[in-house]
Image (cartoon, rainbow, N blue to C red; front, top):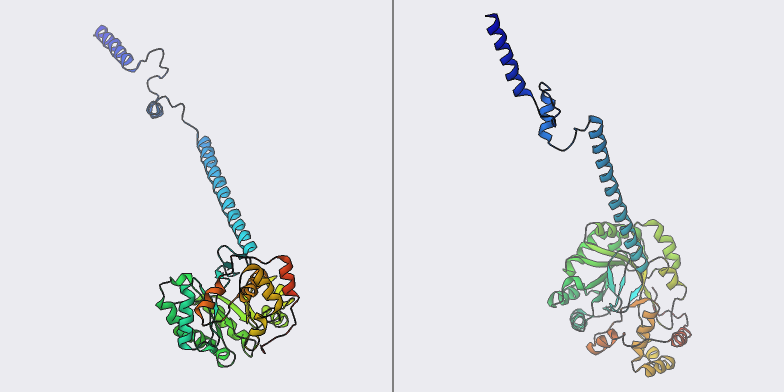
Length: 363
């Protein structure tokens, strides 16, 4: 029995050895446990990284992602800054190909349009219609003109997309300055064209700052897009600008060869504000004299254009937008046709010599 037990012991040892043994190329031995199984599952991928090594890998990946994100963010910020600088440099500069100017509000405005002062309801409707048919897109109106509704009707009746048209209107001192929110709503209702591209204060007056601040709120609400002033000069602007939040995009003043505002114009333009001239032909009672000025006529003859076109082109080359008034479709078309010729430096100087500092209206 002792011999049989010994034989059985040997057989069991041999069986155990055959099941656990490995070839000389496999260094694993029986009884190495779960870790060995895990290594086997990993195949030939190499030894399992330690906890420290895994942590280092995760940190490296995270650091790389942060660097990439930081670089992308930095590039995006720089691109935004470059675009802002480009736009800032372009503010107030006339694009004679597009016939527009970039305002400090970010919107583009046509540099030539139609003034509707003194045009009655039907005459105003017809004039605006003629302007739009001729390709004009800038219309100036005001509460005091009494024709905001006619302007709105003409725009709605046209086939011109609303976003192509730029409408300016104005609040007038008195009740409208005291109750500006109501006045803004009235203008929106009369025009009935959705939003108003630009609203001006017609001239300085009591409660003008209060009225302007109400206009600023209307900009935030999307009812108005740009703001401006009419009949504000250097002294008035120096007092007014520190008291408001949104810098005016435009100042609209009387400007013509006999009243050139040689110091006011650059003063306004240096502030990034576009200037627009009303009464470009001198105003009622003076138009005939100005359009028959010998200097202007000689320049007009040299270019094969009208005296009116010479004066308007002179304005544009000074960086002054224009809104000549007319109810004559022929004159409206002519007033838009200013981009097929240019005045020389000498011609500009000759017109500059016509200045008399002669203001024709009390504003």
